[in-house]
Length: 366
Image (cartoon, rainbow, N blue to C red; front, side):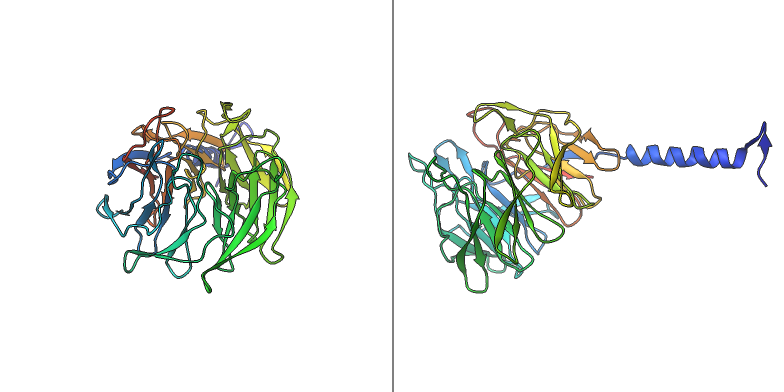
């Protein structure tokens, strides 16, 4: 029986207090911490990293410092916290390489810069087989690409877009599909954009392509791009990740051209309306984090690159929370890879403009 004092039901009042306290605790849950692991065998940035079916992480390509490509590949074992060399790629992929795990467990490694004096982009691709630890050449891309973006479609094919030089006479970005069944590449549609900073696979199977000039949607069934909303604040070199409700969070970036200002602003894309809206502000100015933003298993998003202190976005409270623990000395063009146990491997990158890459690695523990 509830006790009433001055017309107030105490039982109900206490229940409301408990609910409120639970809500506060939910929005203030731990943002996790960063601890050192590794180190990698080689220092590198602008490389590729992908989770294998074995639970280990393949790290391939990248650049040690300007003009010096990193030709090796290595594996991270989350059980031991150590890296080891694996088979050497048959081709040099350098910076801007993509790595995509296929349904059969193999990894498609495609494109990148070979590191000659003028920008030299490669169309070469190969498959990494975790069972044998070896790389085997596969079909060539339809055009050379470095800094392309790749996504595994529900069909099992891989969409690759962007990365080729864009001139005023060729403003349309090309895209292609890799077919694992035949080991071949096929051109597929063309976007309305002049760059492709980030692509995100949506919940309905379509792919959102976002750049500094606008955004497109790719429909795998029609093999066609359609223009969609434009960010309310355009930027480049940003990161993005899917939220639990199907929307997409884009964070940080650089505004005002190649030597512009890094930003704290975010944008949220809603595929139901095709529109962008401003999101909450980051705690840090961030850019060069396209491979270092990860959707966590609990629905939050880890923003691991672009600044020395990572932070977590909590959709429930619409707030960014700084992550405790170690600070990063490599955060530009680093990678973040979600592990099977919910931790995240942060690998490589660089900190100072014109500086060399680091071989350091860290683990984010939720």
